[in-house]
Length: 296
Ligand SMILES: C[S@@+](CC[C@H](N)C(=O)[O-])C[C@H]1O[C@@H](n2cnc3c(N)ncnc32)[C@H](O)[C@@H]1O
Image (cartoon, rainbow, N blue to C red; front, side, top):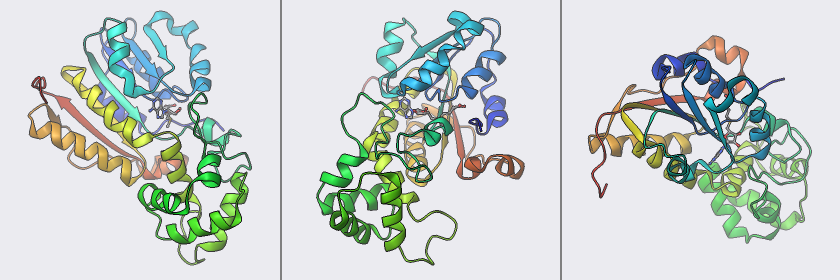
């Protein structure tokens, strides 16, 4: 199965790529959004696409044959957007899109992102970084583990799970961890989702420092949008959506952004039927109407 890009039609209706436009795809992944941005901005629009996962960039390289230097690939954290735009001598861009979280390629890999595939507890998007999920699970204090499960997984049973982890470690694989969580979370609680979903989400967020990257990346994206440029963000859980809302609200209060949709755009029932991953997606978009003050 291939990664299916989420909310593609809705996103493009809002961005409306133009032939002389410059766009940033902060999360290349399987390149679905990048490709449509390039196709709709044919023949001269440009796309700068980030991914901190080398594998995603390697796959993206194949697109260079078709799109040539209209596509610029950057293997780095999108938090470093400004540094790269400066290097490329690009002052401002016409549209920036974020499609947060993991791609199907990552979920299907043996890199520990999914509890459905037995693999070492790694979870790093950027394999050059030192921290893995295995290190957290086997070496952090119980209190620290409880704290991250509670903060980043919004897990009601954080203490119970943390205690069980510390008692049973070393825990080396995704399956061992998922089985352990399943044993300690009461049966009737997680009917819709696997009981280990929140634990895996918390570990992934910490390993990849996801929320901090988001805060920095969103601010940088707003700053480097041209006037009338558009920023669109697809989030998949409440912690991500909360940060998007906060940053957009703050920029709106400063008169820098105008919200395009007050309520988030959700996928149609048809999309959810065809792509289960889309069921929790929320799209928020905003238009840049004024440059920030120097000390904003
Ligand atoms: C959901 S996928 C994107 C899918 C893509 N929009 C598509 O249509 O195929 C998210 C991707 O963003 C990357 N990513 C997540 N956080 C990142 C960050 N802070 N910097 C760079 N890439 C990041 C992940 O490695 C993953 O490949």
